[in-house]
Length: 466
Image (cartoon, one colour):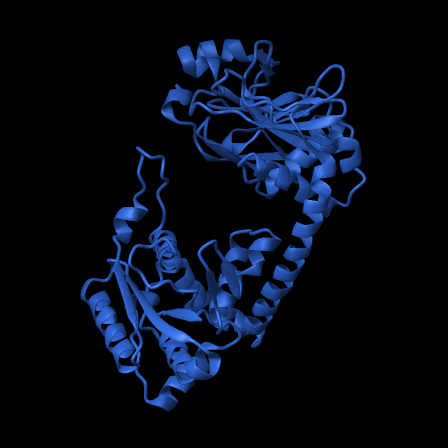
């Protein structure tokens, strides 16, 4: 087996290379070393490359090297719609792309490798799981670094995932083997470094075995995710149907807006909430959209408690529509900052309360929460139970609002006239609706809704705010 060790020059990768070099005959390995120069850190990175080249020569191991411009790659490219990335994201993408190139059987004149080994340790696993948790990952995100990552070209393997970094350094000291230190690993501007040097040591004051437990959590999450994927694959064809029903039977599953997928809501309602969420997220993924928790709950609530004709617009152009028997999902191209989709359909952003709405087309991000203030007989306190859903949308003719300190409700049209809002901005002015009436309107102060707190995290852009 031809195996390349991803050799950065750091303690972990040097230890992995030395350990495999000692046992290469026993393991039947044709060992290689691979170093990617990311074009960062100047002379320090040049020194890393030279160190790795000399170590491979000392161990009589073929050495592969390449250079990339990570900074340029991270900037993105507006012409090709390539989004900007962080330096860390770009570096990782370039690194793994190069690994696949090394394993590619179509690479001209290259020695084809069967696999690449990276030197991720148990400490790396703990840091990854904690970082995913802090970002609010789903269960699959908590699976962390996988021991083996398959690709069409070959496998990426991580033999040291059960080994602590302290063990790695003790092993190298025993060999009298030095290694390179990446000074950027001490910069606390990077999230991972803050987790490594500040947060994990702090949490270990509460639980000295925290790293081990986080690594165990990752294994549990991986195993459970494998089961969930098989279960969703089994059930999805039974509940998720292409397109929409047509007269006389059958379904229309053509391309274009409105085709999409449909979910049978009666059957969905018989399932456990965990499976409902999985199937709805799976359906969205088939359309190229990724649902976060708030969006998933909004779609689930529409499916289980919505009325026929209700619609929900979500990020990435995903649209959900409730019919008498189905929840229909489709992707509608969005025209930014217009307040409408490319097809001219008004946009709606709905979330359960409490929740956060991200509406880039309106230039607004807002959080809707329950407050402890409630007045008997008024607002939420006078309704049948608490408000459950909030929707950010365009204002419509006939909409009314109650301005603060006003004697009665006013038409939104009249309020916009008083604000001298005209043109496109007026046509697509955003309002927040809950339980059939408007509780927030951009640019004006409304009478507070008892029991409800609305916080605008980002204001609307100029073309909307007028």
